[in-house]
Image: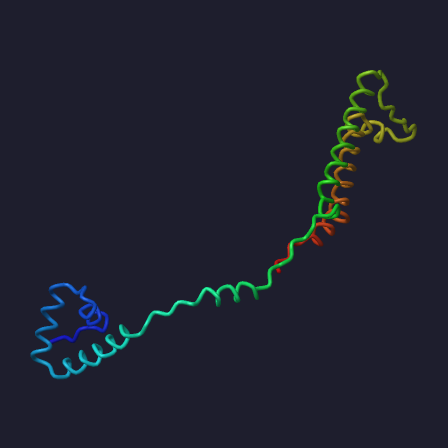
Length: 165
Protein backbone atom coordinates (compact mmCIF):
# COMPACT_ATOMS: atom_id res chain seq x y z
CA UNK A 1 0.00 0.00 0.00
CA UNK A 2 1.22 3.52 -0.80
CA UNK A 3 2.51 5.69 2.07
CA UNK A 4 0.93 9.07 2.75
CA UNK A 5 2.89 12.24 2.16
CA UNK A 6 4.05 14.50 4.99
CA UNK A 7 1.46 17.09 4.01
CA UNK A 8 -1.34 14.52 4.22
CA UNK A 9 -0.08 13.32 7.62
CA UNK A 10 0.04 16.88 8.95
CA UNK A 11 -3.50 17.39 7.62
CA UNK A 12 -4.53 14.35 9.70
CA UNK A 13 -2.81 15.80 12.77
CA UNK A 14 -4.43 19.20 12.21
CA UNK A 15 -7.82 17.56 11.79
CA UNK A 16 -8.52 18.75 8.27
CA UNK A 17 -7.93 15.55 6.28
CA UNK A 18 -10.55 14.03 3.97
CA UNK A 19 -12.35 10.76 4.72
CA UNK A 20 -10.37 8.92 2.04
CA UNK A 21 -7.06 9.93 3.57
CA UNK A 22 -8.28 8.99 7.08
CA UNK A 23 -9.35 5.54 5.83
CA UNK A 24 -6.00 5.02 4.12
CA UNK A 25 -4.23 6.22 7.29
CA UNK A 26 -6.07 3.70 9.50
CA UNK A 27 -5.25 0.87 7.08
CA UNK A 28 -1.58 1.86 7.00
CA UNK A 29 -1.40 2.08 10.83
CA UNK A 30 -2.78 -1.41 11.20
CA UNK A 31 -0.69 -3.05 8.46
CA UNK A 32 2.68 -1.23 8.39
CA UNK A 33 5.04 -0.91 11.38
CA UNK A 34 7.31 1.37 9.39
CA UNK A 35 4.46 3.79 8.68
CA UNK A 36 3.40 3.66 12.34
CA UNK A 37 6.88 4.75 13.55
CA UNK A 38 7.07 7.43 10.85
CA UNK A 39 3.65 8.75 11.88
CA UNK A 40 4.63 8.77 15.55
CA UNK A 41 7.78 10.76 14.72
CA UNK A 42 5.79 13.33 12.76
CA UNK A 43 3.21 13.45 15.55
CA UNK A 44 5.94 14.22 18.09
CA UNK A 45 7.27 17.03 15.86
CA UNK A 46 3.74 18.36 15.44
CA UNK A 47 3.13 18.36 19.21
CA UNK A 48 6.49 20.06 19.82
CA UNK A 49 5.60 22.77 17.31
CA UNK A 50 2.20 23.28 18.92
CA UNK A 51 3.85 23.69 22.34
CA UNK A 52 6.07 26.55 21.12
CA UNK A 53 4.62 29.99 21.84
CA UNK A 54 4.07 32.29 18.90
CA UNK A 55 6.41 35.20 19.33
CA UNK A 56 5.48 38.73 18.45
CA UNK A 57 7.99 41.54 18.54
CA UNK A 58 7.33 43.93 21.36
CA UNK A 59 6.06 47.43 20.73
CA UNK A 60 9.29 48.81 22.18
CA UNK A 61 11.37 46.81 19.67
CA UNK A 62 9.25 48.15 16.81
CA UNK A 63 9.60 51.72 18.03
CA UNK A 64 13.37 51.40 18.39
CA UNK A 65 13.64 49.89 14.92
CA UNK A 66 11.56 52.64 13.34
CA UNK A 67 13.54 55.31 15.21
CA UNK A 68 16.83 53.98 13.80
CA UNK A 69 15.71 53.89 10.18
CA UNK A 70 17.33 56.68 8.19
CA UNK A 71 14.74 58.57 6.21
CA UNK A 72 15.72 60.77 3.30
CA UNK A 73 15.46 64.41 4.31
CA UNK A 74 12.83 66.48 2.57
CA UNK A 75 14.33 68.99 0.23
CA UNK A 76 13.08 72.52 0.03
CA UNK A 77 12.08 73.42 -3.48
CA UNK A 78 14.27 76.21 -4.72
CA UNK A 79 13.96 78.19 -7.92
CA UNK A 80 16.42 75.84 -9.63
CA UNK A 81 14.00 72.94 -9.22
CA UNK A 82 11.40 75.04 -11.02
CA UNK A 83 13.84 75.95 -13.82
CA UNK A 84 12.08 73.72 -16.34
CA UNK A 85 8.80 75.55 -15.84
CA UNK A 86 10.56 78.91 -15.97
CA UNK A 87 12.20 78.05 -19.32
CA UNK A 88 8.90 76.81 -20.74
CA UNK A 89 7.12 79.98 -19.59
CA UNK A 90 9.75 82.23 -21.16
CA UNK A 91 9.69 80.23 -24.40
CA UNK A 92 5.89 80.41 -24.58
CA UNK A 93 5.93 84.19 -23.98
CA UNK A 94 8.46 84.64 -26.79
CA UNK A 95 6.47 82.32 -29.07
CA UNK A 96 3.18 84.15 -28.47
CA UNK A 97 4.93 87.51 -28.86
CA UNK A 98 6.55 86.48 -32.14
CA UNK A 99 3.28 85.15 -33.56
CA UNK A 100 1.35 88.27 -32.50
CA UNK A 101 4.00 90.59 -33.98
CA UNK A 102 4.06 88.59 -37.21
CA UNK A 103 0.26 88.72 -37.48
CA UNK A 104 0.22 92.43 -36.75
CA UNK A 105 3.02 93.20 -39.22
CA UNK A 106 1.81 91.04 -42.10
CA UNK A 107 -1.85 92.03 -41.74
CA UNK A 108 -1.00 95.75 -42.07
CA UNK A 109 1.73 95.41 -44.65
CA UNK A 110 1.50 95.20 -48.43
CA UNK A 111 5.19 94.48 -48.82
CA UNK A 112 6.46 91.20 -50.20
CA UNK A 113 9.76 89.45 -49.92
CA UNK A 114 11.98 90.74 -52.67
CA UNK A 115 14.34 88.21 -54.12
CA UNK A 116 17.45 89.61 -55.75
CA UNK A 117 17.77 88.67 -59.42
CA UNK A 118 20.95 87.15 -60.68
CA UNK A 119 21.53 88.40 -64.19
CA UNK A 120 23.96 85.76 -65.39
CA UNK A 121 22.26 82.56 -64.20
CA UNK A 122 18.69 81.89 -65.32
CA UNK A 123 18.58 78.58 -63.39
CA UNK A 124 18.88 80.39 -60.07
CA UNK A 125 16.16 82.88 -61.05
CA UNK A 126 13.69 80.08 -61.81
CA UNK A 127 14.29 78.42 -58.44
CA UNK A 128 14.37 81.51 -56.25
CA UNK A 129 10.71 82.02 -55.66
CA UNK A 130 8.88 83.15 -52.56
CA UNK A 131 7.90 79.58 -51.70
CA UNK A 132 11.50 78.39 -51.90
CA UNK A 133 12.63 81.20 -49.61
CA UNK A 134 9.90 80.38 -47.10
CA UNK A 135 10.81 76.68 -47.20
CA UNK A 136 14.49 77.47 -46.67
CA UNK A 137 13.63 79.72 -43.71
CA UNK A 138 11.48 76.94 -42.26
CA UNK A 139 14.25 74.34 -42.74
CA UNK A 140 16.75 76.68 -41.07
CA UNK A 141 14.36 77.15 -38.16
CA UNK A 142 13.97 73.38 -37.75
CA UNK A 143 17.75 72.89 -37.86
CA UNK A 144 18.18 75.65 -35.27
CA UNK A 145 15.63 73.99 -32.97
CA UNK A 146 17.34 70.61 -33.38
CA UNK A 147 20.71 72.12 -32.46
CA UNK A 148 19.14 73.88 -29.46
CA UNK A 149 17.62 70.57 -28.37
CA UNK A 150 20.91 68.65 -28.65
CA UNK A 151 23.24 71.28 -27.20
CA UNK A 152 21.10 72.91 -24.50
CA UNK A 153 18.01 70.94 -23.52
CA UNK A 154 19.43 67.41 -23.62
CA UNK A 155 22.43 68.12 -21.32
CA UNK A 156 20.17 70.01 -18.94
CA UNK A 157 17.63 67.20 -18.61
CA UNK A 158 20.30 64.49 -18.41
CA UNK A 159 21.68 66.24 -15.34
CA UNK A 160 18.20 66.34 -13.78
CA UNK A 161 17.95 62.55 -13.32
CA UNK A 162 16.04 61.40 -10.26
CA UNK A 163 18.19 59.89 -7.59
CA UNK A 164 16.61 57.58 -5.02
CA UNK A 165 18.20 57.68 -1.60
